[in-house]
Image 1 (cartoon, rainbow, N blue to C red):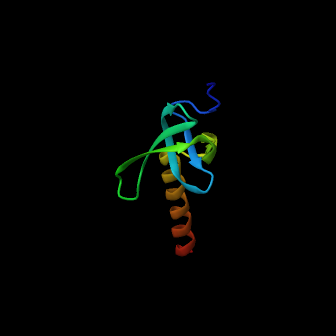
Image 2 (image 1 turned 90 degrees about the vertical axis):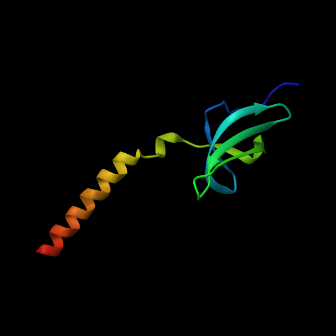
Length: 85
């Protein structure tokens, strides 16, 4: 049986219906992919999904946490300066 799954271990994916960012941890036979993620309580979760329920997430659209925090700090400084005027 030929494997038609387009994902590789380590790829980030999402469910077609939405939800958290998942990481592919294992490619299984029968068109299934094992994924891991953290839930709202920072517990590690794992589940096997049919590959057709997932799409590859484009990591280029994600910002580093450091970049976000710096941008957020700059915005706060600008707001404080405007309030002082």
